[in-house]
Image (tube, rainbow, N blue to C red; front, side):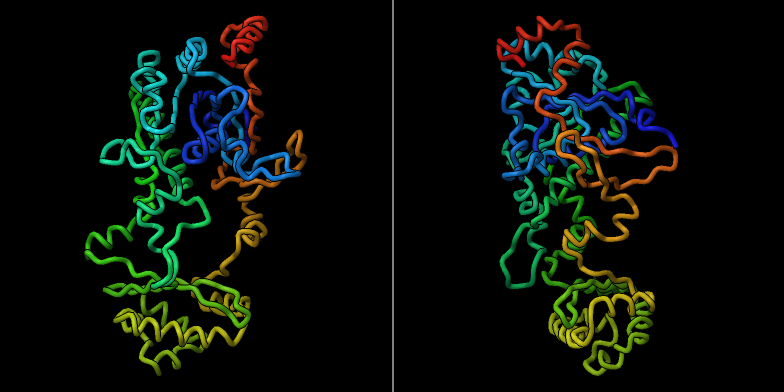
Length: 405
């Protein structure tokens, strides 16, 4: 298996004026795969995300560490002529340039696509916003919670009649990161095949709409809202169920089945079918008939599941090929045997914080092994990068005195 120096994106240069999570998380995946990711930050303070989730006694910010690992940090005051000149030098041979500032900021500060493409006609330029490049809100800033709200996702959490809410997890940011990663890879592939660069525009809102997937198409087909609740019961030609239940100790688990045959086989084997048939819920199509039937079904299942433990039910149902799993807390997930075995959580030797556990890799490649990097100190790579551009130690000291770096 090849060493990390031979990773597939080795030699790919990314210059990024990026912050927070939406785009940086995409570039952590680029860095994991060997790309050189140069992050531009304001001198002295860096991006605001450096201070997020950094508590007394903790050397690292879990937020910044996760979203910036493997990066090189260069500080530049882009409001100065010399700072902008250095940015342009970096961009001249970059494969990718990225920004996710509030719409209009890149143009005002002279690093919009129109500026960078003059220097590097073959650049793949990623610009990621809140609402997308067109539409009435295109110039507005946005965040993860706003995108969850505007994209319809927040309306699906919780039971009917309860307050709508956004997730505690940054669903929109992380979805956008996946979309951005895919977009960058497509841009690189197009460039490799044609020699052409291009501008790619993505958004938090567009990412959430894509995340909604068939649920959005379902609404488009029917013109009806998706009902809120802890169970999805699908009628039609192919019935299905996805729902959450509690055991006798209040511990949750989830079940999902597709098709009456699979459902009936599992429920009969587990000894549930007779009780469900008694209340007119023996078939999934019956459960999907009305909200009343769904409610009756859930109440019946709750009574059955309240007679034993989660571990018992999960083991029993899996033996009869019913797809189910415990509803893990995030802490429980971090210790889950499948998560550990597949390296979805990995350990890193941090030079100042010691051994730390971090998010691992969603992929497993047969030809090379991945190793997680660490987030950079502010301006840690100033000398390395500027020296590569031909600046002397004297030049760099002068740039520092002038507040350029």
